[in-house]
Amino acid sequence: MAQAGEHYPVHGSQHVSDSDFNSQVISCFQGGVEIIHVDGARNITMSYVDGELRQLSYYTMERPLEQRSLAVPPSLACRVARQ
Image (cartoon, rainbow, N blue to C red; front, top):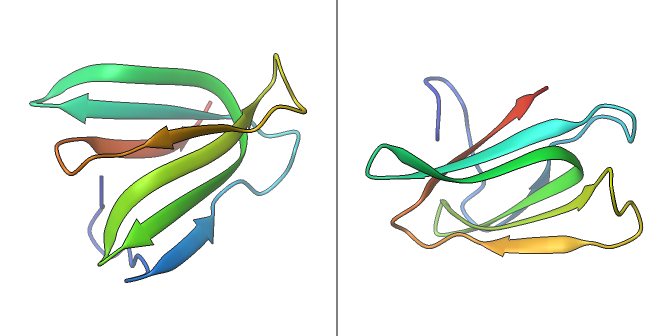
């Protein structure tokens, strides 16, 4: 979810984790209901197309060597927050 004053790239990606040691929570909502919740996400990259978030790539604390990806359709609103 875009917050007031935040700027997202039109095309490209944005790395949002500042350290391997700081985990984040990924939450995605559809119609105001949380349908995806990922605790302990690290090294998160958010990929954008036409200014819209389309993919989240991340690692989890449980599987630190296995990159996971989450496709983000236009119907989802996702946010990343510190734990």
